Amino acid sequence: MAIPSQRRPSGIREFFIGASFLFRGFRIWITAPRLMLLGMVPAAIVGVIAIAVLVTLFANIQSVASFLTPFANDWGELAQTATQLAAGLAVVLASILIVVNTYTTTTLMVGDAFYRKISAHVDAINGAPPAQQPLGFWKDVRRGIGEGIRVLIPTVGLAILVLVLGFIPVVGSAVAATAGALLGGWLLVVELGNIPFEARGIHLTARRRALRGTRARAVGFGAATYLVFLIPLGAVVAMPAALAGATLLTRSALGEDVRPTSVNATPDPA
Image (cartoon, rainbow, N blue to C red; front, side, top):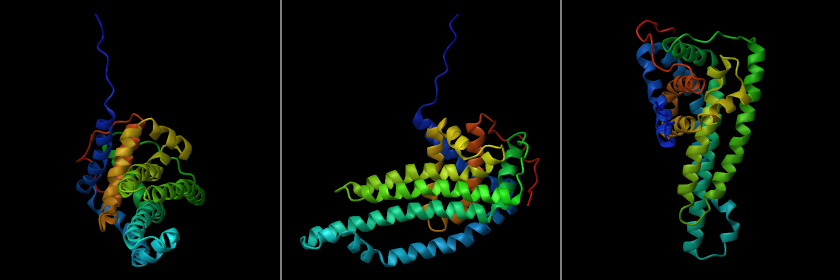
């Protein structure tokens, strides 16, 4: 008798499964509300700085757009205005990409202790959590800074790509925004996965390899998180849930169970 083959889920279905991990992350408010509230504290502190940077940029966007388009100075008024508008939108999209990823890296460093507890809580309610492998405070700090820099370098390259795409006539802004959400979301996933992967002794190179094995799911989670972070104050509210969702994504990528087994058995560890 022939054994029926098991078809792999489609890329689109995998994408939405990944996005659902973020919304499952918000459900951790039910099992650990105080811990999630504590997770908002570092997000709010870093968020104030991020908002100040973006407000400053937006206030000077016309000057920045003019600086980037000197070739349009001799064009007609309509063409010059359209070019500067496209340049301004491209700068905004590229800047948002850099700010979102820098914000995530910085927030994870500032609130490391809180986010490790959130990740451990998610592991606890979804099955046996992995054995912790502490490296020591300063070694953890050095590794975190080093990996953060290695993630932010491609972020700058992607921001330049988004900036260039924004100059494409007619469709540039839409293409740049889509690239920012998908590719920027991928970089966001790599950074958010730092804590749950590190708890399993898996660091940046191996983390990227594991996430590439479930790329559509990872991009779905990253894109959903990226878009929620764009909502005013969304990053502050969603940061703890994003870390919880990243832990679920990590478990999924490593073949661990992502179905809650003891939702009511684990108290709020805060």
